[in-house]
Image 1 (tube, rainbow, N blue to C red):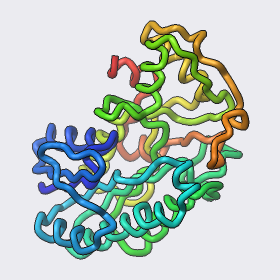
Image 2 (image 1 turned 90 degrees about the vertical axis):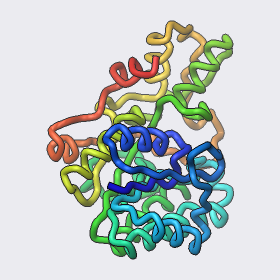
Image 3 (image 1 turned 180 degrees about the horizontal axis):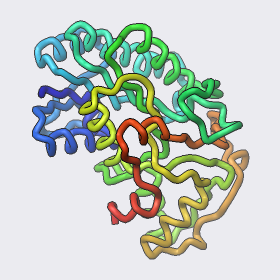
Length: 285
């Protein structure tokens, strides 16, 4: 089975590439900001290049984890990021439809306002920042454009990655250098191991699932608790972690605070669930 991963150099994309390869699938990947051997350079805002690649490779499944995910940058640069996060994603969706492939898009808990989490798929989205509104617009457009699609909403993703950008790796690096770090205690979410997202995605394909699935770890905790657990598991000094409220961080984009997502639909579909914090972290030690 031919598989195409658009954005295979990132955290989720690199794990998708590996998980598909382990299944013996014929998988190709693209990169943009982080060139890597074996990956095809692609700018998703270039409609012609996107269409050409997908037409030539004739995939049965197209994964799209690529997204500009710096929420503060999105807030400050809504027009620029719209071209990547909305127009670019829809370029891929349209080209996928034209070859009759299945399309998998990765959305976020940022589509919710963070007042009444944890959320189910039936709960009404109400994004409070540019990034969340961009994600939700793509969700809506995909459901209008395609029949054979999956939307996996993910959150607080961590795992091994070359760039070392995710919260867990940055926290570990900071604590190893004996530096303090301020972490919000009023942001609640569902930490998710990237490998589990890839595994869930492949399992959903194998059972020919369609539609919207919350795809997150089984625990729902605040970010400070998460940070302390990381420190404990890696033998680092948790006293260097300073609990604060989000308002003290002066971040540009509003954050949904009481978030997290329930994955009952996915769990029932697959008879399987993504790992909780302790189990997930144990796999990256």
